Image 1 (tube, rainbow, N blue to C red):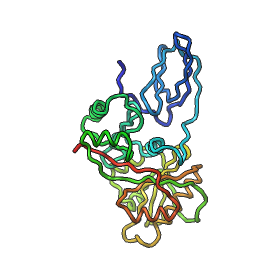
Image 2 (image 1 turned 45 degrees about the vertical axis):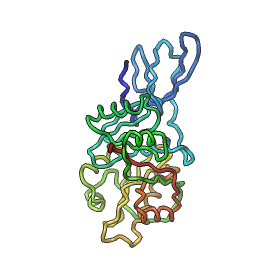
Image 3 (image 1 turned 90 degrees about the vertical axis):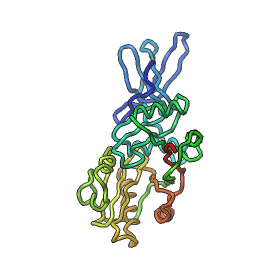
Image 4 (image 1 turned 30 degrees about the vertical axis):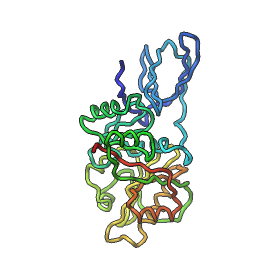
Length: 295
């Protein structure tokens, strides 16, 4: 039996619609990323479940299709997949619909299991498979109120870092002066106060890095129609002077330049000042999630 853990698609992996005809003559379609193919098999990985192994003899047609469209009205799991691609970790795999991620231990997102979709194993077995891949205990990222959170809590996992995902349409905003680089330079890193391990996780996905003088920085990464904003930091001595709002405006300008239609960001529930800032700029809550570890 093929291993349930498979390579995770990346930005170069083609998404296809494959039509197959079974021995009975029935036609069916499977949509997902084409992760492997040889003279005997084609392996298609849908985003929400395990791989479908299709014998070459059953393949009728294969055509490329765009990535799934995710809107502000889409479900939490769809939006989490968007966010995942903008902070992907350094090593990745798929267990059914779950995304296994490993980095340098600096950020929870890059070092956790995104529990979306169906792992196609009972919960305890899925966690055990993820722990084997990780060579140790895993942290689960689960949508608040969802099935996976409930299973984790029942299995003795404890939640931490409750986080709000906020969304807004992109659009023209106030003009603000800023500098843009494709890789964080020394000046950007100095304001961000970012350690090397977290920096390595940040640059694992393409992004624009913005800086306003030596007082504020931010990061914007695009996935599909979405620009995900992160790493918004203001130098401690310059806080309370409006530089955070200026950087938020700059990130919005950059998002529009990059062609994004929607903005998304995440902030921990306890960060009341950031939540107030984002609310004042038109962001609304989409969903919440937390990270869960064994008690």
